Image 1 (spheres, one colour):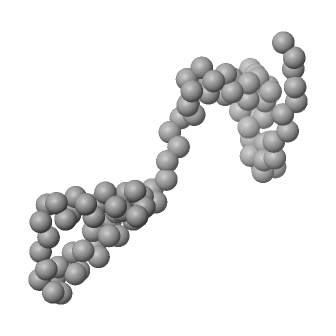
Image 2 (tube, one colour; image 1 turned 135 degrees about the horizontal axis):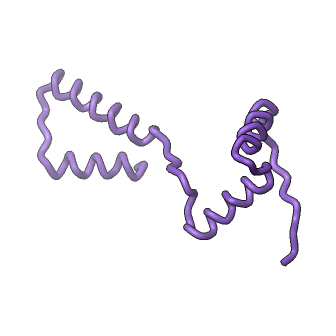
Amino acid sequence: MESLTLNVRVDGNDKKNFEKFCNSVGINVSTAVNMFIKAVLREQRIPFEVKSNLSQDIVYEKLYEAEIEMQTNNKRYNLDEISSSLNNIIEGK
């Protein structure tokens, strides 16, 4: 199997600390990166959770806005309207 080089730019302090970590567990950086790549290919996903709180923050912001609107003009929404609005927010519409 052909072996190729992968160049990655990282923060200098992160690189130094990562090298220290790898040494502490008895591997080098190349082995650690290869372990990561193999895990991604085997599992067909990033082997740890990657998420943003952005969508959650948007939902909370919209719920707060709706609460203020309901307090100021006494408008009430039915379950279908609420469900539709939440789906639109989540889908980014």
